[in-house]
Length: 276
Length: 265
Image (cartoon, rainbow over all chains, first blue to last red; front, side, top):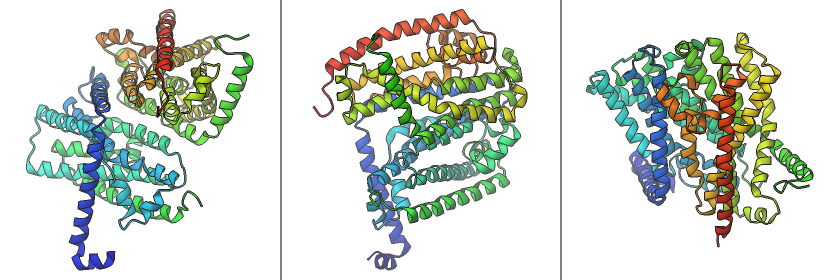
């Protein structure tokens, strides 16, 4: 049935179907979540507190020096803004979806996901959307552009395109890291703590990578590519394009995404369902 | 003889059962210990940018401070609100309330058991730290070590009482753990986990001193790392906070239990 449908409509038909599914998913989940208004207010206060706290910590590094790892105060604020934006993306998209996988495994409902006529990784990754991160995304964007204006950077079309590309690259890497950990829940039922470890390490992205010692910089570039989450997009926004870093980032994003895909297929193959 | 509902026998059986329970979760606890690496990341930032000299911290002071902050955090982590919320939602709370023992004691014992399970992992992480930073190795004097241990225990008590106060909201609301976020944010920035409080500007320092947070990490960590610290003032502040929080917790729990109708009723 499915193969006949797709051969009739071609890839455009598939894309349309997936697009329609995603819009349906996200409309319903946002409506449900907005009912918890108190939660929303708390999240908002916590977010503002977190951002002011981390800007305060950042300011401590500027009491004597004018730069941190060669970054000016305004430039470092762009990094903070991107971190906040990505944190918002995590809370809106990644966390609500990927932390659910473990429940599907435990309750055996993953079986139903696997037999759906839609790719399981797609279904699990896009099932829901939470408004929790929307204020963070807004505030992050605001901070980025405010700090850019302060630093006197000129945002042309070229800058906007390259920074959007690198931001997307960062999001793909972030997604792949999260998904890799979430996929291990096929074997281990408790992965909540593993995501906490990931979060703790990702927090290093609040600061420009050049502020870290060399060994750590290498690890953060190749092994856990935090560099490409915040520092590289910030460099793009500031008009400091570096074609080598761009290419490396895009390649790493493709590699990490591919690994997450392979790992998921491997995990599903080993999935034996909850009751067997 | 019973004190606050506790006898020797009850304490022993609570601790041994909870420890056996926690041993089942060794992997999770090891990962959890690992998720406390934030002080180490901050240490690399502070020392790589030579930012400690502004407030009179040498490189050695910095690495000792942040290792101590890591250790103090490991043994003062509190999660009672999450555990309690789950028990309240699943209806496990009702039988606990019937027992002639305050339910909070059960959570205290599971925290202590969890700390004991965590101990070897914390030691391993500290050993790895010294492997990479052999020059920062130090052994605190017995006196300092005992004082630091006491300060950590008091820090744990303050955190536990603060979270129990929030947990008491569970009697009224189904989502009390959301309020914990409001506690965690100031804790993260004012406790000294990310930066020693000596680095704060005087105005912020003055403000922070009015909150319980600096006494949760900064104070015990400074004792352990053998840095200059006002011992008497710190311990007095810790005890004052416990004296403030303890009656509040007892009152709100009494009111909460009276209000409690169990989930689904």
